[in-house]
Image (cartoon, rainbow, N blue to C red; front, side, top):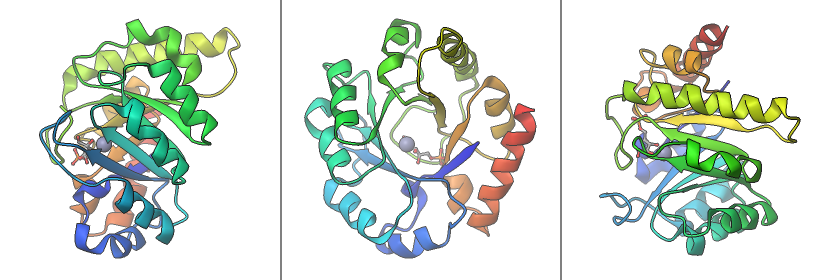
Length: 223
Ligand code: DX5
Ligand code: ZN
């Protein structure tokens, strides 16, 4: 069970200090938005490079942008360990996933709440992680969408079916949006094993203690 705090809810004027407040994080989730794929604009490659220079933590880049085919590989080349593109935006997701892997990153595919997983089952062998969005992407602090829970269960089942067939590699199932102490148990029960949390972590009095609490709840709920 891993917890990736989203820097979207951190103080953008003090990112290094914010990262130092969360030593228990298993990775740092960085939301790149272009004001086209989503109605919000955040940061891009220069800021990711600056973050890379000040932390050895795993960087989990979530690209909410048009044309990830063009822009995503540079994040892998900048040293991010994991790069997630939205399948709704990718023109050639197989080629893109292979490019990310050959640039040394884990390749991940994200789905918006209304995007089904089933059409992409055959892509799983090209991926290291699937991100199921549990809010409409674009903003932190939104309410968790319970309507995504059945898709999380179905995605877990596809991942397990694949490993029963003996396909190599482990695929992580990440959730992003509205994850908190109130919602993380049902997320873990549904089969997720990596959790992004922005407002729940950075809005807590003790962000690092919140990470530990979230991880413990998820582990207990998964049994
Ligand atoms: C939203 C972003 C999330 C966001 C989550 O589009 O992808 O990573 O930071 O924020 P919370 O955890 O507050 O819902
Ligand atoms: Zn995100």
